[in-house]
Every structure is written in structure tokens, then in C-alpha cells.
Image (cartoon, rainbow, N blue to C red):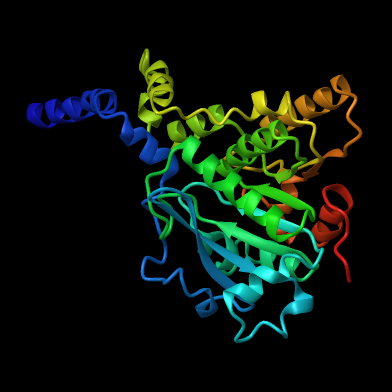
Length: 330
């Protein structure tokens, strides 16, 4: 019995030491990019799970190739069978708005684009059917993309795709849709775009790094919540890994159109966090006298939308078109 107790104490005490000695472990836990379900799915063949969708790769920097799925607007579905990637690329210049979808941790472009019962209706049944192009990105290290994930690297990948899309769309409207951890990538990217003189439109479920740390506590480190100094250790490790995802800081400078979608029963990112960040955006709009739409749509907890089911809102396509982007051409 004593040996068993001693063993448990040793294991308990060793976790903070291991995290301190190998800080990359915490980064891997946050990104969870090693999770891929189903593992056997060939991400280069979206047609196996999703119609009117083309896969392609972009070299965002030396040694880094990222995978992207491009799903067409409904008006082009009939023309899509058998078409080449070059044809798909040309369709981006048709004047219709483009969504760049930035998924959360532990996900791939299949998880967020094609998994029945999760977000398929967002990207396909709603956005694509409503007349929008949708490009779903796997950051470096996610899915079949090469490289190792980092906040700076993921932001660089999204920024590269944004500029690539803007070039192909001949200046048409492009919107970043960030989900969960992807909201941090979205606001990071938007800040970069704004620095370069362009306008970037945002649409996202909203949290920040404090929430991701809270999630780590609740999922992985709940037994350490009352251990003195453990939270400070985690923050120190995050700083070493340059993981910040400072949505609050970013939104203090962003003057882009913004739509925040949040359910009051979200069990991952608390609703009050999304509300707080929305209020920061309103204050920024006021300070810069920016004539841009900033809106938050709140969903009652009784609807049961939680963290992944806002697509069940039957009016979502109208909300998107009214608040974040001009309506697509018919």
C-alpha cells in the first residue's frame, strides 16, 4: 500500500517537472495536432467525403506545405465534376465572397469541413449553398501539412492563404472565420493584414489564451488546480513557446467588420469571454471612429448549441450576409 501511495505521489510530482524540462509538450497539448480522425482518410481526396470540393497545397515558406480544401458556391456545383484544380482557382475570380475557415485545435480540414453532424452544414449546407466560396486550411503540422505548429507559423500560413485568395479573387471580399483556437489565428492574421493597408473581415467564435489555459486545467490538469505556482509555471511555459493568441490585444487595434457568434451554454469558451471581447471591439470602433459593422449574436442555452452547433441556427446564412459580408451574387 505504501509503495502504491509513493508511486502516485511520484507521478503527481513528476508532471510539473517534465513540463518544465520539456516545454514543447505543453505546446503539443494545446495544438493537439497529432490527433487526426479518421486517421486513414486521404485528405488529398476530398471527393471521397465531400462533393464539389478540390484539394490543393501551398508552400507558405521553405519546407512548409499546407493543405487546403476549396468548396464551391452552390451555383457552380453542376459544373464542377471532372474539373481541374486550375479551374477551381479561376472560379475564385467570379466576384462572390470567400470564407477562409480557420479550425480549432485537434482538428483537420476534414473535421471542420466534412464531418457529418458537426460543422458540415456551416461550410457546405449554409455557406456554400448560400453562394460563398469556402477554403478550409490545415495549418503546418495539422492533417497532411508539413512542418511543426506554432502560433507564429499558423498565423503565417493563414496570412499567406489570405493574400493568395485576394490575388485570385481579383480584390473580391474575403472573410476570416475562426473557430475556437482558430479565432486567435484569425485576429493575428487580421492585424497583419491591417498593417499592410488592406481590410480584413472577421467572423468567429471568440476566446483567448486564458480560456485555452482554463480548458487545459479542466481536461488535463484538474488535479493541479490548487497546487501553488502551477498556473504560473504553465504561463511561463506558454511564453517560452511563444503561445499567446491575444485576441483581447488584437481587438484593441482592429477596425474591421466583426461578427461574434456565441452560445451561452458553451462549455469550452465561456460566454462572458466572448461578450467581453465583443465589448472591446465596440470600444475600438468608437475610439477610431470606424464606420464598420460590429455585432454579436448570442444564443440561448436552451438551444443546446454549446461550442460546435451554432450551425443549427436556421437564420445563420442571413445573419452572415447582413453583418459581415455583402450578399453573394446570384
